[in-house]
Image 1 (cartoon, rainbow, N blue to C red):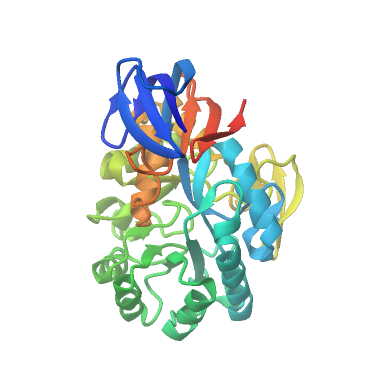
Image 2 (image 1 turned 90 degrees about the vertical axis):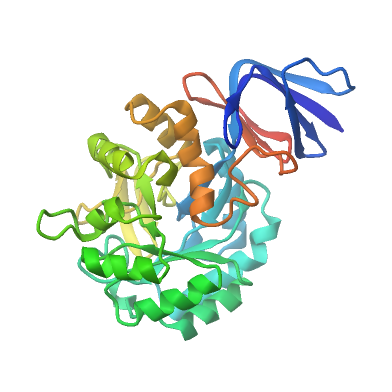
Length: 382
């Protein structure tokens, strides 16, 4: 069955075009054309709207009262379905620091359910930790911190069915360079964060293969004129991507602007770091083993520290446009293609491309989400 989507503008992989018609056949993107199609097929009219690739959230711990660390197949399915309302069509369920045994169970559960979720597609797993250091622990439990271990990582990777796409660690841990060399050769992306590392320590591990900085500015040694630290490394090292939480609480818009100016829009991956309270009312929740209070748009530990977020990715792309940090084209790229490239999953998601699964969103010209399509079928509509 062939349908045609009409819209004022389409954000394709390398350009924006329109108005015109985008062909979808049996759930797959076809060609774009400016003229009204003469072939048989339904035309879905989104006059006054834009069509963009489905958003890709590569750092998300939970949603709709479900946490990845619950190791609950039904919870992952509910999370997957609910993320469509955020414009997200692909994601990496993200773990927290925990025991070796617990993480093995979580990895196994995700591996078993990954190809059976009803909504946003699981494109891999992101292990955030446990190879961190204590000073910038954030909402990670330091009692489980350790130096990187290939034996332990291989156990998790085996349990997951080789779905772990990215792992985060602190560059100052012992044995990190060898660990990073080995797993990046296996195609696993290494991110740096929750770290008191220096510029030189970060540089050494980037030269060993690390390529992403975890929620840049947050959970890392800040920029100092005598020791540029982790933030300085994120800003100045070449060929690295920077995760960025644009909820207005984690990072001041002007700090976000400084980072974007330093790296370029094509090296910024918008993420949510969302926890289970995303999409839920204010109240008391858990992030892993820690109680969290959600109030006034933030999620905080008892001590008052931020504990993940309740940000929706559709909000992040709108924020950076409203803050004057990006054009709509750049914002959409930072919420779809760049996260996918940074995690080496851009062969399956992140762009509107002929022959690719027709996962896309419809936006108003004010960047508000109007609809989410998965495999060419409308699965969420305002």
